[in-house]
Image (tube, rainbow, N blue to C red; front, top):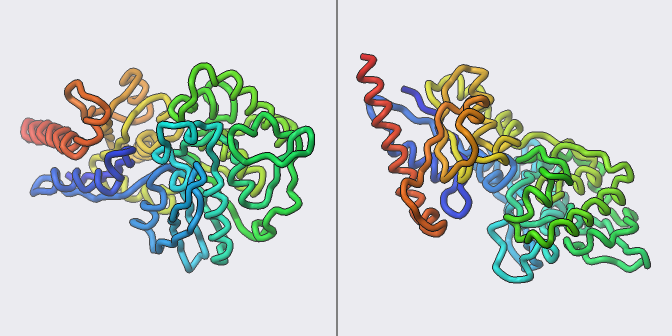
Length: 376
């Protein structure tokens, strides 16, 4: 049986490469053969997936993280095409949050994303893919825009700091000092979700709590984001993907005149994923948590929808999942296999991720062997 393993990274525990390696170790024998493919959806692991699957090299950039701390970011570089692949989670990732006020969305910024774009421009990039997803920020992209020369002013003409706290105060936006090099570059935004900027499934209401917003923050922050939306676009038109990465999607789409695409679909195209699916008898995918957000463009659902085109069954390994199995079956996931089999803390689940995935994989292997024997 030919197995294709395309499991997404599981935040705080396993990278895509590590998860696929576990599957390969469990299943590679005289009955099964495993092909590993590092994958991502625009969020965490996007650069690593390009480095693993394409003829790219790693480039480094000294930038600021979401709290203004100096860090060394990386991006993937394909010299032949002058292509840079930048991951917003690398500099503004949720994993960079800490339990204090500097990590509250009102105090954080995507400035490092814009700084990384600048470095790629200096490297003579002609095409830049920016992965949107996995961020701990909700700044509407004003941090990244500021790094590229955009200035934001309040009603009195005072220059505002490009952090989440400024969103509701923005009255005027100046593009006078925008880096002119962006006009000669093709930008593609690879989004992990298709959410609008505002509303129940938007950057604040759907994703705010996991980034540090409290219930008491929600109404005002949503109002601030609506105000910013109106100032930025005047029309307040809802565009799918604008809410990705805490609104980074809308900021970069407007500034860079960028095309917004599904992250998993873009990576599938670059990695020739559909061809690899067609050669498999069974697909393994997965992520840390399968839930309503997954249905908006995350890896497991993106993989299963591609597999449906080739009539290849899909099994998803997950840390946890919400909702009914039926809704996942409808998008092509034939079985959801929880990795956690006992009550434990989140910290325990993360630290035991290797053991948990190994056990879950062995369980599935035993079932497949039994099924194969009964059909012999």
